[in-house]
Each structure stands twice: as C-alpha cells, then as structure tokens.
Length: 418
Image (tube, rainbow, N blue to C red):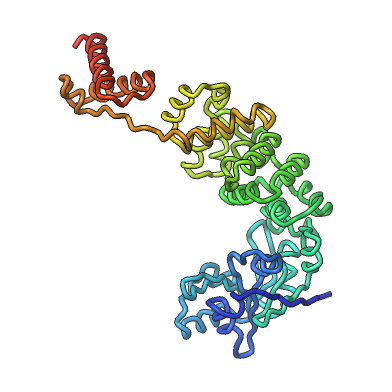
C-alpha cells in the first residue's frame, strides 16, 4: 500500500539547479521526481549527496528538452534510460521509469514505462525506494518510510531475488546497515546474503573495493563487519584472515584522536598483519598504487614501534615521513590494544606535532669540495653521511657537520681504496 509524507527543509528542491531540472521535465504531460538516496538523506536531515531523478519522459525527449534549455546532456547509460544533465555545473542522473524484463547479475534487460510503483519495486532497499516530487510530497510504494523511522535496512520484496539480480547488493546491505541501520540486521536479508554469498565471486574487484571502502568508514562499520565474518562473507572478499578486534581498536583510536575515519587505516587494521597481506588486498580489491603502498608501509615491521625512546622514534619518523609514520603507529597501537599503555601510544603518534622533521643539511657540493666527482660514488657517500647524521642526533652546527662530512669522506675513500 502506497503512503505519502511531506519533505520539509529541502531548499535544493525548490530552488537551484535541481529545481530547474525538475521544472524542465515536469511539463507536457510528463512527471519527474527525485529518487533514492537524496530523499532518504533529506528525511534524515543529512546532506542530499548525489541527486538522482526519475522521469516518465523517454531518454530522447530528456535530451531534446535539455538541449532546448541549453543544459548539457551526456548519454551515460542511454540503453538503460539514463542521461546525465549538467545544470549550473551540477550533474544529475535522469533515468526514465523502467522495469526489469530479465536480469543476470549486474546486467539487465529493461522496458521503459510510466508506472512509479513498478519502478520503485525494482530497487534494492525500501529506504532507497522513496521518491519526492517538486512540491515536496514524498511517495512511498515499498514501506520505506516505516523502515526509515525504525532505521531498518530491508530488501524490497524477495531478498533472494533482489540479490540474484545484482550480487553487489550483498555488500550494499551491510554497508547501508552500517551507515543508516540501528540494532540487529534484518534477519531475512542477512540470511539471504549468506545463501547468496557464492555470487560474490562474479563481481568485479573494483566494485567490491569501492563498496568495502564505503562500508569501512560508516558509523557502525564494526557491527556490519562482524556480521559479515559470522556469516562467512569476509573470506571471499578479503581472501585472507580478518581481525575485527584490531578494527574495533582502530575505530576507537580514531575517535579518541578526533580524526576522520580512514578507509585504508581501517582496512589495514582489519586485514594487514604483514606486507604480503597488503599486496594480496591490492590485487583482490584492485586498489590504487598509493593505497597499496600505504598498506604495505603499515604492515612493515609495525611491531618494532613498541617501547621506543624519543631519539629512536625521531629517527623512525625521519625515515618514514609524517604520513607513513602516523599510519604505522596507528596500526601498531591498534594491534597492541587500547589497554596497552595508551599514554605511550598517544605520545608516539603525536611526535610529528612537537618535532618537525629536519632537512638533511649536507649537500652534494660539500663532497664535491672534498674531491668527489658527480656519479654513483657521490650518491653513495651522501647516503652514508645521512646515516651518520641520524646516528649523531640530527646536528645542525657547522663544526659538527664538517666532522661528519670529513669522517664519511675519509671512510668511503679508505673502504673503496680511493
């Protein structure tokens, strides 16, 4: 049974580019509504995010209207009825009402229509099946308003069928619960995800990685991750051992420090114990090279960070740089647990705030003046001098630097019989 409500305090609906696109499509017997996440978020008092629009107008008509209004149109998914309109620099995905005729995984044969109920019924979760018209009237054909009030994430219709249509919905179920759900997961949906877990193998690595990143930074990520582990869903995603307790500690440390959630820090806590784990995750989730390097650095001998004195910590910070140092300390702290001398870990992770990393003051010219020619030997002696400078505690006085340069040059000449 369909229900309605009124959306208040959504200025983007009554003015600005979204209102302009709606007005463009709400003419000549056609109707357009904002659908999905923007409606859900607005009802929860959250920023709308991407604003998607559904319309009874056919794709060619959408393009024609946009062209007449001098709005850019991009046929991003024209075969499935989707045209992206760019109004005042803001993109809007506009999709003609449709229903699935035949589905297999993420591929579907669709038919365009004018039935708002059928269009809502083909979506994933009830809280994503809401739509709002230009007048602020929220239309609910799938029970989304009641589920949103209860903060329950529930599949529309038969969960097994929804999952078979697109196995990525398994991950989305846990991700949306982590972001919007309260209390236990919907039992029917959870059991359907477990029954359909073999379908995770057909998903692209990029799509899995994208959903996992979003899940890990959600408010209740830990509860969803634990439920996934208990349901046998983490192993096919991570292809390795998971450490939810370390993830729990990482989340608590982030909150203690007042920093924004980091998907890679949380992924490292969940699944990286050694550097080999980072490379496996990189391949499994098709991570960016920078993300793989971050995880690899975190997993590299993190256990050696426990019990360091100030001088040793400064040397480690100098070698790693601020970002890599903090990442590795965060992982080491999470693996140690919140009860393991929190004062020490607070002191260590805050080292970059109180000790700016110095710049190595000796240059190539200092060794050219001591008889070295440009080439590999010059680079080698500079590296040795930097090691000696670190060992001496980062001195900056001219006399101390001259001693380091002289001794390094003499030792290099002696060892290489120059």
